[in-house]
Image 1 (cartoon, rainbow, N blue to C red):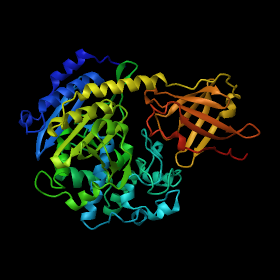
Image 2 (cartoon, rainbow, N blue to C red; image 1 turned 45 degrees about the vertical axis):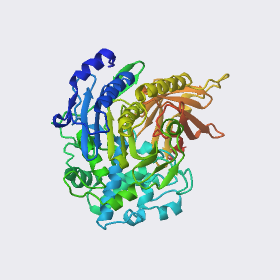
Image 3 (cartoon, rainbow, N blue to C red; image 1 turned 90 degrees about the horizontal axis):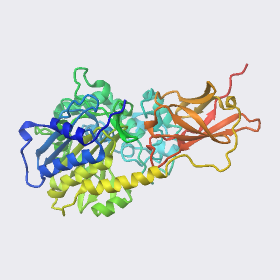
Image 4 (cartoon, helix red, strand yellow; image 1 turned 60 degrees about the vertical axis):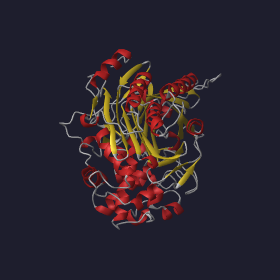
Length: 526
């Protein structure tokens, strides 16, 4: 069911604003709490966001930890500073920190080869297999392409760790080892498995017992399924779809493990920020990790080109990636942070270490630029920057770009489409060497496709031209329509198939259909 979400509902939702009582009125010179709260309210209204939780820390103090709006648009339960959200790829810094703790304990080295701890680890490139280190796992320089192999974990698959490791060996490389930055989730899944192999504790247990517990992150969990049944204070994602806000539940990326499975809150993440800005010293004065290891995590291990937005808006001159953290300059200041995205839910962490300043924003809508605008508002007064209306500026660019993108979206028109062969010619089982089986079958005269490891990836094939069809998924809010092109033998039997995005500027990169390398599964001999 869809729900209208407009100004009236925002106003009602903001009656539910909740904060940490002892901190609500506290201000440290620099951050302007009133301006930040106004920016949050404006962003929620402008970008159709039902709920936001954020925390701001400065100079060793929590300046603001607060919830706005509602956890779920259907029941109107309020967001507060303890509401759990999926933090997605902000989990990567926790995995890097877990390994940093093990380096401090002398149980491994950043330069250990991965195969020392996971002997069965393989990449398609033998040299990369032999030389891949813990550092390489955490810095997106494996040689694999952006999002390569994500269909093994996205969205909500049934793959075991053993199956993931087996599949990784078959992923095509996109560049030579350590030569280019390309964001890859599976290497962080492997990093979490290194924690398991070294300690005997699975990644989830290590993070909860060795990190959340001493940090005082009392409600955070390393996976949605680990949230106690009695705790109902968690947010449901939502997607602004066809002019309406629609609830969209997904399990906070449980399958992403060390790459993105953590559920956390504003209050808990404020303790994480304080620890990061104190070089590993926790709020209780004890150490989680050494300042030496933080220096390693915050050292760029691979460089990226400054973005056009960064140069235009933040005077960005450099951009790189460390170990689980993105690093860039922001108006001449070193900025460390990360983003995280789930279908229907995004989060962002950003810190200016030189000013002992950090912010986390959690939301149950998938409009990442809105979170960036809020963070820019936090930084504006604290850094003494010229005043700008960040939400308004960001919204103007976002909606202009969105209108252009969707105006140009859709299936490429073919002037003289060629006819298809009979439906039964295309039916059968296709095999990807790393994903597994993809079944094409005819049901009631219509071709259907079934990604057997992924419940959400079921759909129908709509003929396009010749042996090319468009995959229309049962869940249209995935926004992942894809072309599938069948390669035929001289006898007009399917030999192979390739897939590609219909709308590359819209579809999430984790739908890496282009990497599948599908071949027809031979029929059993009679």
